[in-house]
Length: 287
Image 1: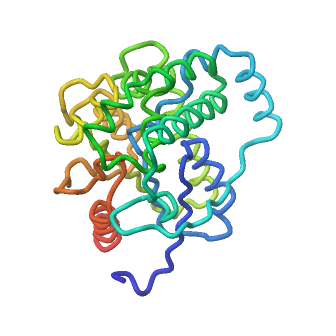
Image 2: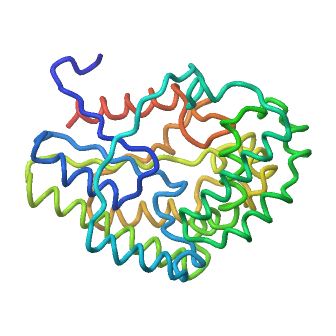
């Protein structure tokens, strides 16, 4: 609405990582020939990479070899009808029983473990013994199938996500360095093909590192959170690296307002999306 003379292309794809962004750009860059390219970097998991137990599994190693032979390609997601104030499709908003919630969550946990080449028996056991009574009694509004994903992710990633944010072990540091190399590869590819395009990276914050009201919910889910602090190691290191690389970036942490995030999901609400779109508009207007 604010840029009537511009044609806007949304090439965003849920669940992708920096390597996926590279594949999307590689496919579209010369088809669209953009003047500006905005790349969102979500600090919740875009820099996480594979878990250590995942990297050490034979299945994962075989998958990586096959990816080198048959590179990742872009793909689109079907747009579902979404209720205002939610990221989820309308069909996931039907209340379910506690027993069904547990069954669905266990299955989703197993699916995540399988897709990540992890020990399925280990994560089945963790999902089977998760404290569903506590979480559903304290948060009765979670009794919808959509929130089974939230709990399943907490069961699998509760320690790993925090390690990635805090960069507190060898695996997390290796993953970060690998993703910085991918970011440089992405930037170089764009410049080699379209020297005049203006590339801007947007650093998207994590809700539970911004406000204690979000942190409490994720602590209850089982995440081993430190005290709420915007200056966590991943953010500071990324800012310094982007400055040293002389890349243009906007740190959305500096523009936080109330209700930018869903409580049960660490992504932006419509309010958060509007904040970011205004930042993009201001950048284009000024540069």
